[in-house]
Length: 141
Image 1 (cartoon, rainbow, N blue to C red):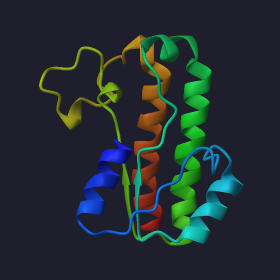
Image 2: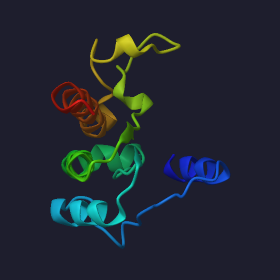
Image 3: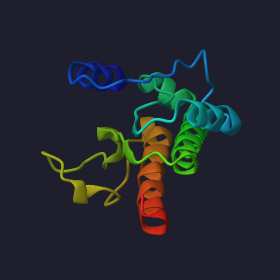
Image 4: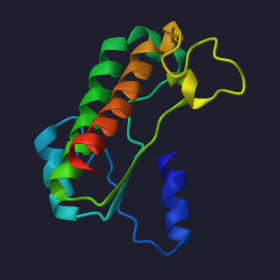
């Protein structure tokens, strides 16, 4: 998703700043905040995540939950501290209940159990959505 957003913004003549996981470990708060303060983006599209298929999600739930909570928290707080004006967090279809009516509607969020095979990833994504709405309410961003 991130590379598709970057391609689209590039076609719109935006200056696109990306970060590779080899350059900055977004799970580390100080590295993330240092990079954000240095690059000073005007807008942020948060699509970074530890991802994998069903087997990876099911066999490494602690890693998926821990990594993604850290990435999301570090980027969202780093953006606030650096004064990033516009922010967009990317969710995922997996945040909706396993048996959500089709087509899914936003109001279906948290109405019944998640798919067990990717529950940890889904919980991290939902936590970030709640974090974003809390930042909006508390900080106006």
